[in-house]
Image 1 (cartoon, rainbow, N blue to C red):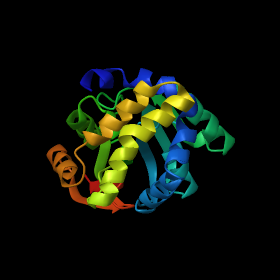
Image 2: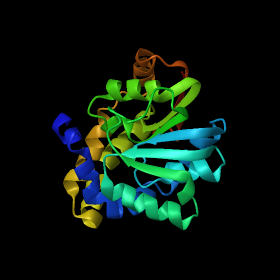
Image 3: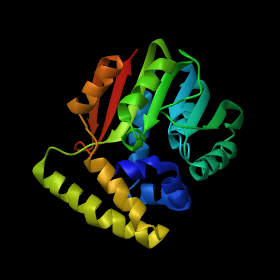
Length: 230
């Protein structure tokens, strides 16, 4: 798992072309609702940093809701960002978005550069999660907001059983069928299972220095919105 995370950009480059379509198909478009709700929880800001911007779905939602004047996105996958740039341009947001190639654990931004920092489904891919969270804290201004949207595990045993079945067997099978890269989707399954969701993740946020931490479960706990303040 740790070795895979060292090459996470290459992994996402391999599946970039099918990533959006599979995400929406396999989640029955619920992932779009999750992003909308997460962004509704944020205050409007001037400068927003979207960590692990990927194909820019979260950035587009931020701008659609008028929650930022400008969004800077950083990611380790050129392939994902290339698709994101096309989507942003198609919607007329290109002047408001900057795409930067780089690691969330060593971001090329000055201290207190951003009013808000967001990350959707990217934290679990950090090679060192605590270093990534510390970097988010560093580049956020005092009083600024952090929003992390990430997968979690349902507490209901029936839902949990179905969720486990889906992530362990169905997701890798369909991922291989469409992208011809079963290994990448098997990794995604393992990354969700190994992520310290709920209170465990809140502890990591506290360790990084964040306060006013809140976890909001979505859809039986399949995803969780984490908000915090510097």
